[in-house]
Structure formats: C-alpha cells, structure tokens
Length: 171
Ligand code: S3P
Image 1 (cartoon, rainbow, N blue to C red):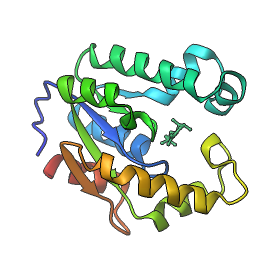
Image 2: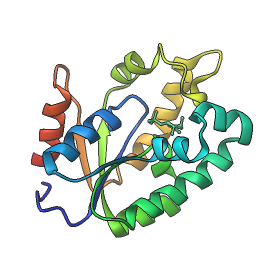
Image 3: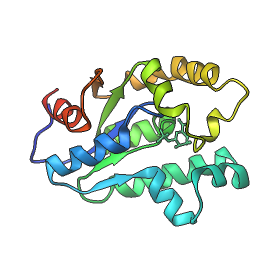
C-alpha cells in the first residue's frame, strides 16, 4: 500500500488509455501532493502538442525530452507523476524511477484501452492503417515490462477515477 505520508514520488505507468492522467490527478488530491504529467510538461515547454513534436522532431527527440522531464520531476518534492505510455520502456527511465520513486502500473484490458483511445487522434503511435492491430502489438510488447513496476493495480469495469485512486492507495 501507499503510505499517505509520501516520501517518494508515485509514478504512474501503463498503456495509452489506462487513465494515468485522470487517476493521477485524483490520487494526488487524495494524498495531498502536487500532480505532474510528463506529456503536459513536454507540451508546455515546447509550446506544441505531442503530435506536433512527433511530426516535426521525431519520436527519438520526444523520448529525450521525456527522460529529461522525468529526471527533473523525480528530483523535486514528492508528487504523483503520470508518464506517457512509452516512458517506462526505456531502461534509463526505469532505473531512475525505481531509484527515486515508486512505480505503479495501471493495468487495463486491451478492450478498455481501445474504447478510450479509438476516437482520439492525439496519439501519433496509433496513426496507422489499423490502429487496433497497432495498439494490440504495443500492448503485447509492453505488458511484460510494465509488470516490473513496484505495484500493479488492475482497473475494473465500473470503477470510478476516485475509486481507482483509492484502490492504488490500498493495494
Ligand atoms: C505514448 C503515449 C502517449 C504519449 C506519446 C507516446 C506511448 O501518452 O506520451 O503519444 O508511447 O505509448 P499517453 O499514455 O498519456 O497516451
């Protein structure tokens, strides 16, 4: 479980559509610590959307920014930090997160993930001719790595964002 007197940053990891931002916000409010979101930090600093950054500067550039932002946020005071779905894939990021934070995997079924991302075009990795097949591929590749997180919390049908935040605290 998560100690309410938080000494380490809680880092939410997991797939696109797992609810990292919404649950992260509720969790931060329940724990009374600041909420941070690595994608938002990158967008604000660049004054561009994630899609624009991918299109203009490429994914490798985005990943470098992501590592820098995560490092900076892990070095500030304890908070809840939501990361982009790919952030936990980089060995360097996993090492930093393990060292300075607590990694929490928000685990949701592929069906749930798809229902949440299918009508949004803000995710450059899903701009393919068959986005469901792409999401499935990414999911299968990443699950074994997300499973290395300190804590795994499964999202259940019908559970609210606040309910999910409570489950994270109680797990
Ligand atoms: C990505 C997920 C996105 C964003 C970028 C890449 C990924 O964040 O960082 O589009 O690699 O899964 P969300 O998980 O918030 O959608």
